[in-house]
Image 1 (cartoon, rainbow, N blue to C red):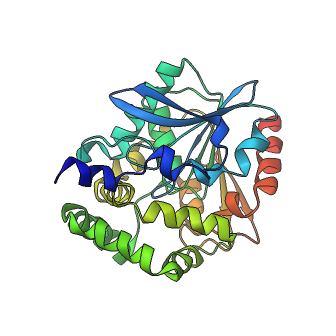
Image 2 (cartoon, rainbow, N blue to C red):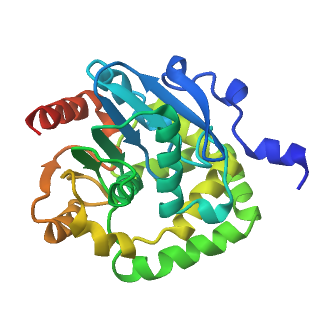
Length: 297
């Protein structure tokens, strides 16, 4: 592949980031062999936000400014996602993500007291806690995907993702499809149980239309292994708040209930009215929930 084609595959900040949410809070940091896109805002105790697979810092677009009214908020794009550079595909895995974020926090010289992860982001934060890379007092899991998939989905998910990730044409094919069929991204969002604005859907279309971003997401799914995390979760030290959403069709509340069977001291809050992307649907509601829980911890 030519260098020109590689550049075409990646999102370019000066071109693709013009309308990125909270653009004025963005900066680029070199850490752990990667160039990270990080958004930093506010003052006070440090709070770390980690998005899930296929997303980026845009996911916190409405929530970050609200949290920054009381906290020093740090929100990175995960490796290969959004505007962060891409490591070796083998490093786009749970352990690799945890190690990379640890290096970033070390470079930034911050120690978050509260960490918030959405979907797979919650698993990354749990891994970091277990590896003693962070020592927060509170971990908030928003629709957290902390345990291996069950049943048929668990058996075919990783092999199918590996097959797609190893075929370099798949990300390009899917990305071209996102460009040609705008309603395809709408259907994908609808399948999560969430209702997003047109601007929110357009940001996901921007990401999915990038073969580089999509390839990183596929590699992340292909390399994802939550069985070791499941075995070690009972050793988790910080308080764990599991926030599940009644309309979530991606990680339904039953998954959070499975976690409470492993961690009886974990607290579970089930919120009605929203789907998997609740923090994008109603940032104000989620901010109030976080403020309430942070104050009571």
